[in-house]
Length: 319
Ligand SMILES: [Mn+2]
Image: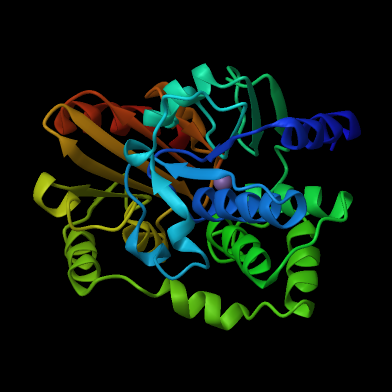
């Protein structure tokens, strides 16, 4: 982490009269919790009320995270006065910003804090740590480096961001995650209660996701599992359909999981997971992105068209 960048961050927070904090559209655990954690840290350490916002929908499973109600839907926020400082977290690509974009464009200064590869950043200052498991990890490191006060809520938010973005500690690439978690647990964070609070889905969501799983197609001798969510079911699933991705990934012999979502007649969501080779090239070929083993895209085409494309693209990886 570049000391100069951190000094600029602190200077901008100190001088800003109003601050906006946002993550990507349709927040996941990392996006929601790192926004809330940073907002809380700014309150605790600078005495300022940052405006935390999101676009899209927050999955029900995240309803139990601390200070959940401190984030507001962007459509309900008065944007007539530009923000002095806007901080955008965990967004990866301009396509994931959604309705927050106008507020970034009018802001006096924009800082991004991210762990995605991003060739076209939107910010004046980029604090990007590609090796961080979650943006929550970067927020933790900033707060430690600056000796910021953290309270129980901040600590739990940071732990939740790491738990969700590592797929419950599955995608851990180095020991930093566990050093941070150790520190948080010693400070009073209860990991079991975080997992329990994330088991918070409506019944119809779980039953719908299980139904989608039962209709999965298996391609390329069972190495690829492809599940399709139709428009009706799409309204009932939670977030990206993580249960579907997880269950299909548990099947012996399945190396790649593809979930296609009919979001609209001419818009298809694609979620990709790999237990074998990196799969982000498929997401990028569809105009999306993400991480090597967990990636996705939103394609403005009919599901059947996207399905054919994905099946062709994955063939390249299987060779
Ligand atoms: Mn993230």
